[in-house]
Image (cartoon, rainbow, N blue to C red; front, side, top):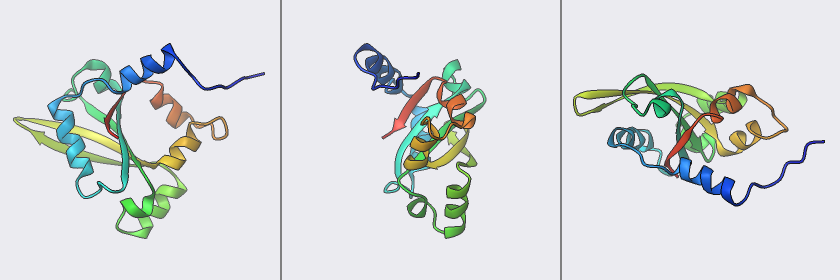
Length: 141
């Protein structure tokens, strides 16, 4: 029997501390670039993966989840919105110039509803849990 409950106390404090830790000016530039033109549709930007673990977002390709309210408000057309809904997430590549350095990132667009489903016991999908078991940091919420 598996009992799933709400985490509380020390565990919640540890997770909050990790998620809301400091960011760098390079990551802030990336967040601003991802938000531009989508401020009303984006719920959160979640940075995770090897660049976070290494502490150097310029050493490799940064990984970001772009969590949106819904696909129709994020995309200008219905075709990418439909395919993102059908087989989430849609993954894109972006480069941001920061001073003399270039920050490379791949970002995955997913709705909050589908992210909640994908990380629940009802929809066990290794694509999501394998990424979200890594260190993560909120860039925007």
